[in-house]
Image 1 (cartoon, helix red, strand yellow):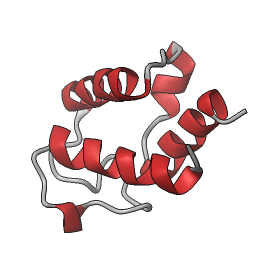
Image 2: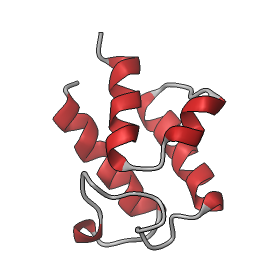
Image 3: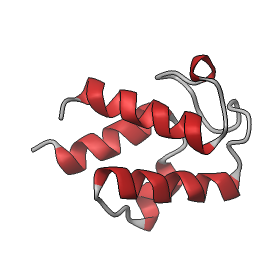
Image 4: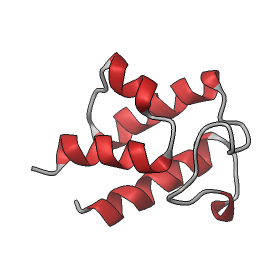
Length: 81
């Protein structure tokens, strides 16, 4: 899976988790600027990402995952070898 595919999946998961329209989320979206992206929904997002990609995140990664870009970077590092 390449970075573009990961980005598309992440955007889809963010859109679905936060009950948004697809055009409300992009590669530059981040917590604090996306409707419904609060601390509780952030945990729902993390769980959805772990299930979708079959990976686990460490606490320090979860804290850093505040934008689409950072989420994609962390996932890419874990699954692209």
